[in-house]
Structures are given as C-alpha cells and as structure tokens.
Length: 136
Image 1: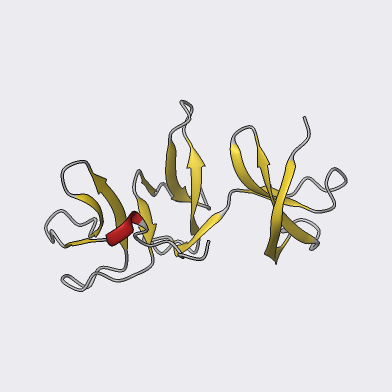
Image 2: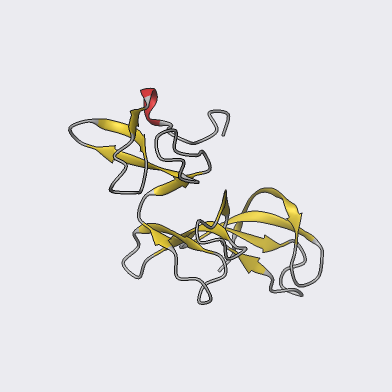
C-alpha cells in the first residue's frame, strides 16, 4: 500500500535524523521518515501537550481497535495516561490544573473543561475550535 504525503514535519526522525513528513495511511495521519523504506521511523502526530503525569512524554493522537480516536502518552507502555477528550495545553483558571480538555455536549455544545471532577470549570467555545489553531 502506498501512503499519501500530506506535509513536512519540523522534527527529525528518531532513528536516522532525516526529516519527518506527515502521511495519510489507512488508519489516519502519522509521521514517517522521508527516507522510507530505507528507514522505518514512524510515530503518531503530537498534540503539542506534554503528558500530565510528568513522565517526559507528549500526548499523541491514537486509534482504538474499533477505530475511535483517543489520546495517550507517547512513552506508552511506560506511562498509562489516556483520555477520550482532546487535551489542550492551557492551565485551568479555577483550580490551577496543568491542562484542559475539549469536550462536546449535544446540549451545551463545544467547550473547554477541566478534567478534575472536583473543579467543574467549563468555558463555552464559539465555533467549535476549542483548543485548535484556527489557521490549521
């Protein structure tokens, strides 16, 4: 199967140091080495948020066995952090938590919320682009 190139990535390949490119495969977008197939360096795209468990990894987008998107730590299995909601690198203004998540409710619409159940912070987002870059 051939993979369709999407765009170049800023970070180098962890195996050979060559440039990485975003590619679209049958399971979605992933980063692959531009020297492929000579180098098989590949990884999931990062969300730009560091892991909330302070393990040194980043939160990356992944797919479950049934095809549902979830977010997990890039150092898995060393770190077992997972979230069904997209994390955003903004701190919670109420409790001081290190991150927020994008949530979508059928009744309330898109919002940024604190993942801490005791906090309860929630801010509505206009247009549904909660933590994403509008230029992307």
